[in-house]
Amino acid sequence: MEHNTMNLNLKVWRQKNNNTKGEFKLYRVENISAEMSFLEMFDVLNEQLVVTGEEPVAFDHDCREGICGMCSMYINGKPHGPWQANTTCQLHMRAFKDGDTIVVEPWRANAFPVVKDLMVDRSAFDRIIQAGGYISVNTGNAVDGNALPINKKDADDSFAAAMCIGCGACVAACKNSSAMLFMSAKVSHLALLPQGDPERNSRVLNMVAQMDKEGFGACTNTGACEATCPKEISLSNIARLNQEYLSASLVADK
Amino acid sequence: MTWKQVFTSSVGKKLVMGLTGISLVLFLVVHASINATVFADLFNSEENGEMFNKAAHFMGSTVLIRIMEIGLFGGIILHIAQGYLLSLENQQKRSVGYAVAYKDGSKWYSRSMGLLGTIILLFLVLHLYHFWVSARFTNKGLEESVSYNGVEMHNMFGLMKATFSEWWIFLVYSLGCISLGYHLAHGFQSAFRTLGVHNKRYTTMLISIGYGFSVFITLVFILMPLSFLLGWIG
Ligand code: HEM
Ligand code: SF4
Ligand code: FES
Image 1 (cartoon, chains in turn cyan, blue):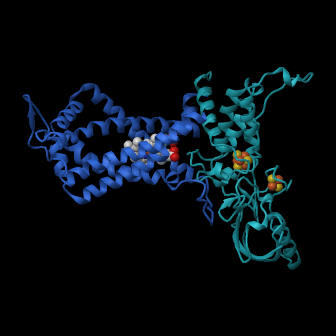
Image 2 (cartoon, rainbow over the protein chains, first blue to last red):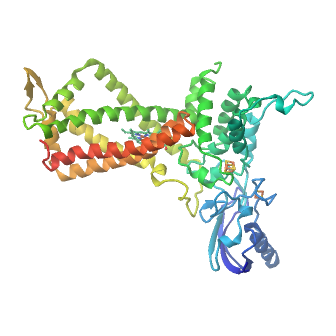
Image 3 (cartoon, rainbow over the protein chains, first blue to last red):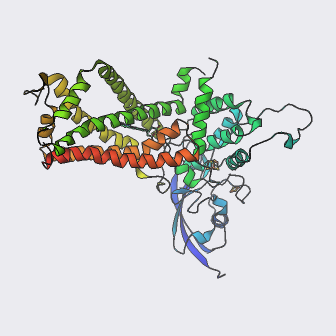
């Protein structure tokens, strides 16, 4: 394969902390290999900044292999950049060409306050999970997995929903800053399995209540979340959540 | 989880939108069907709007329908109020916007439900003023009644003909109907998703029906003023 390098202009959001107003800064990076990942390109930029005495750009990342959901950059008007079904860390520089100007912004949502530069606080997702995104298991011997018959289709759908890595791109993409794709992935993942059944009603009611408390918007089914989700979580999960919520509230005690 | 908590949650608010939206869709079906009787004129030169006038008279003079009308107004008001509230609340969830907007992932009309609704609302005010206010209150344009088999009634057909003799009214009505079409192109399938329909079998079907219905209802409603304007009927 031909090896090419490129020179790029970057327009990056810089913000000291949550109490200060941020602004875009222009940077130039040169000799960027097309085989680099987007984050490696940012590493190059940061080394450059360290040399010139400027504070490096803060951004979240961990696994750099598309499974942890930490990398959160809104690149040229799309969360995780131009590729479909892809995370920022798995975006490679061959997606761009020499001379391009790339605009990089943090996730924008009041429920995800900016911590610094491109880092946002996504602990709202953790609190939603704490509100109901789990199953309670008695201690004792592990049960034989094969003792519980599970319909193949339900298992597949559940697994597809369980692919969600909690990155928050769905919130970033949504005009309403709604967390419903994430929510519905978690609710569907558990509701489709017998292990999730006992707590299904309280789970969906408590998780929705927490989601509203965190300040996410209401879903209007525009589909922007599904289109940008690195794990291709299906919009139909949101409809399943709606159904779960409706039936849970119909049979609620009070 | 009290009912109040249910209906003030983000999911519950959408439920109100979906339920009122679907009721409005059912209303549109009735409205379009009744109005389609104006086309009886095409097949019978003696007609002169008799079938339509009788249908309109039935709708205006039947107690049950008048009760349903209250429900309809309640539904529209709920839909509009909740629609604006929801749009406003959703907007407030992102205080700092993006420099580059994300447009590829969704249809423009899916993102513009509030705007489309506002155009529909403005159209609705004009439309109610033209027909509903005249028929119920002011009698404007309805001074000469018609009678069939001794039953006297408004000549609503005549009022339509007079109203739609002007180009600008036709254009405003067309804009209203096209906005309604786009509103429904998103709203129809969205409403069923909101109510929890998630099986692929039904969602694909509902998306197609939704597009079909949106185009059909837009064309049927535009055809009426157009037919009067161009003198095809009346
Ligand atoms: C006859 C007229 C109308 C019909 C048939 C209609 C129908 C619908 C339907 C079916 C939905 C989808 C509900 C859902 O997603 O669950 C909807 C949503 C909505 N409508 Fe209407 N509507 C009408 C008039 C209006 C008006 C006058 C407004 C004024 C603001 C409005 C504003 C909205 C909004 C903001 C939404 C929510 C957007 C969304 O869920 O994506 N609508 N409408
Ligand atoms: S649903 Fe998709 S976009 Fe949303 S948090 Fe999960 S993986 Fe990320
Ligand atoms: S850094 Fe883990 S998914 Fe990108």
